[in-house]
Image (cartoon, rainbow, N blue to C red; front, side, top):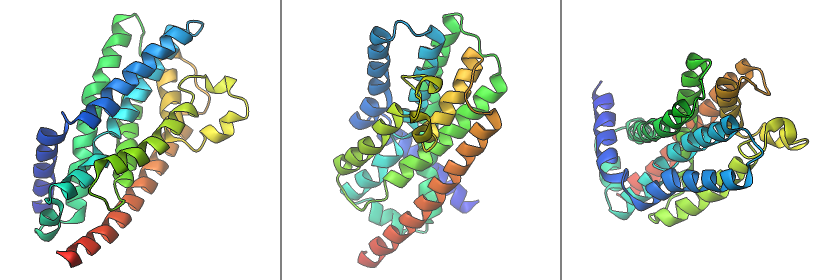
Length: 247
């Protein structure tokens, strides 16, 4: 319980400090909006429900991965990371605190495309599957964001560059801009992106169509979450031990 309270305290601190940071706003809010507006102009032949499905999926993805990657380098830049590591706070509490801040930001911003969908006569046919998919995907993506923050640096720009190199290719191979059934051999590449399975769940909820069985979508997101979380914990532990020796 003590570590949980510390994790919640870290979450509160992260919310107050990092939600309004420039990179978080740009990568978490503005980029999905610009992608969506560009997509509307060039994708007039696609149904509105598909466009909204893409916007919702992109919003969950970009918002969940916009906060957690930059917290660690910012903490290192401000010389507060060493203080956290040297204090009676476990690495698990630090990572959970960062993750909770990320998932809160993600779910808060994702409400916007959901409202847009509902006000434009798009019905979410299976709210339970939709909410489960969005929640699970948000946790999966924030675990990915935490994994991206493991390189030891005090320059947030280095992490943002690495993050961009990974996130943007995932967007283009995940059926966001082209329906999975029209991607041909690209479907084989899409299997390696967790965003693919969220898009499939959202399309099922808003369009009534999906490429993979829903159980495959859910299980795949769970597997990606476990892999990202374990890798993040192991790498952060290795980095924190190095930091602690230096302190």
